[in-house]
Length: 370
Image (cartoon, rainbow, N blue to C red; front, side, top):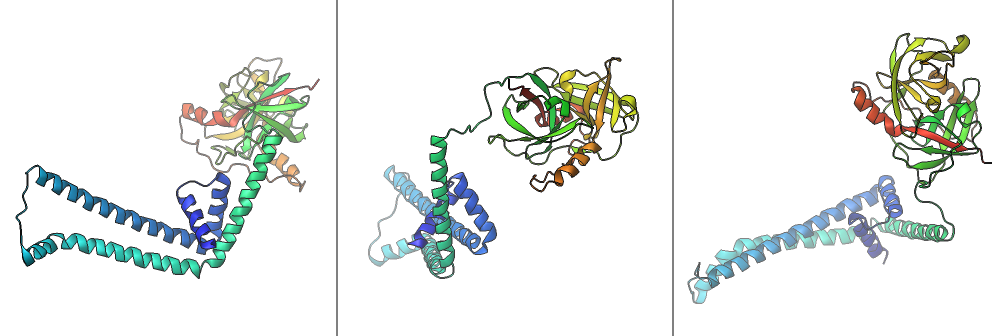
């Protein structure tokens, strides 16, 4: 009985009938259990043999139908034969088809026998284990479904626009949902959401803040958020050069806005060595937005606008992000955050760089909770 259930599981896997949970478990089992993986491969060959046999039969049947139709229409004629001559004629005419059919039938019989013996001996323990785990998974899925029915859990991003007493900008540093923004952006927020460039809202929570450099790390907590792999940009660990050109993305309004400028001083307000002075157009909603070099590196995070000078902005240096993560790592209960190391933006023209970056920059939205 276990062997039959195992075969049914493989059939459902290969035909795409498994649920996502079952398929995920089955694929993981294939990776960790070479015997099960070999079983799936052999069964695949078996099914391919059946398909070839069926195709040969269908082709043969089509030939017979075509011949009969042509004879009925008088296009071709078959001479009447008597006695042994008829037998010899039929043998000569169909001996190739008969040989092919016999070969296929023999192959299928041997393959079926081999698989049957393999199923009943070598993989018996694997069958029992897999059947047990599949049944366990089905029970867990049923439990989750019943819980989701009795306790409503949103399966999609928040569609209703939340109350926005404060707004700012943030960007991903880890595709698992970790973002960087300004500490002052979220300092008065009780309920925090992040809005993607596609207009979807996700709930978020503060993971760590450092008021001295005005930076904070947020974590998207919404269950509907899907992890993003391979962020296209990197984060620079060293200082930028005077005059280096860059571009910015942020949300000073309800849609993402582009800006470009250059590093005009290697220190921030009052000689702050943890920040740069930038020459670029920016508004309050740009706070927390990334400053991106021509090569696709994050070199800073916009923190404030100089009230005395137009077009002068201050930005925390990107190397501060690494210092924040060092502090986070001191708490063993925090998850491991991995800053992107690759950089696929390098060498692209500016328009393509911006299009790539838009999906990783978010509007930070929050209310006072009052």
